[in-house]
Picture 1 (cartoon, rainbow, N blue to C red):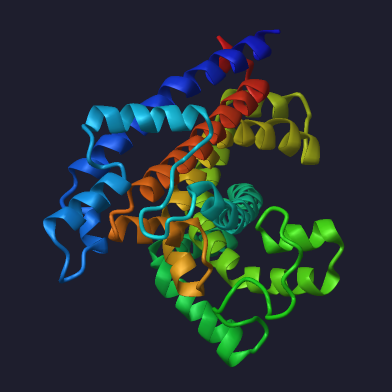
Picture 2: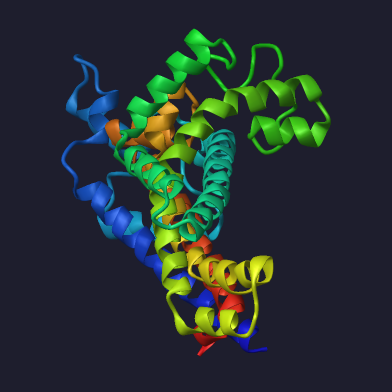
Length: 336
């Protein structure tokens, strides 16, 4: 019951956070320099033509009227229409969100598993040669720029070895699965399309590996430090004094204590990767939400920028919500 009450209170906090994000984003995209109307103005356009374009885009009213109109649309589930393409935002999002989420969640999920295993394993062998190798490896991985690592993986995995497809899409031509979620590997699995699933997984390997290396390199050091802190605490010594050894000691104390501190960090990492995935998408021509949002920023496409930020904020706050609930389930002191 206490856990349910804790989850309900955390869920209520999501509403003001999202309202604040929507408001701040709306104001920021309008105070930035530049006029989106100029993207539609030709050399021969007159002042009347410019005003007609401004009216068509809904930019001829006051900022308060635009804000209220935007909020009303959000409550109805209407994210607006792209200024650049004239296509509803919901239609463009339906083809962009799935590929990005597939890339981000798969990369972060694998990175978390690898980080926990290697971090705990390294802590159990602290100050031994393999521990030093793990620490140096994680330090090198943290220092590598993401776009540079992606290019190196393309050269090795595609150009030299020929094991993986090149950076030119998410599935081989002619093998696109029936679209359900927009994520090719998920759609192929749901429809039982084995050739499409194999092709989609092959295209995922290099971009996911890019995310995994960058994220796990940073997390391994944190997990190792947490595991060492638990091993130096009194409960660990007490458990050893009572005769607990081997897997019972590691699973009952070390893994549980380490995992209890991981959810919040995982949510933070997920938000960072979601915000920075645009570089990976650009290198691998992934055509996901990151590239779409970047184009919106460059062309001052207000509805695209607003929708991209709101969706990212929604995922980020929900990830924190899940992280808080998981941490409260693992550590009852958090529910107080």
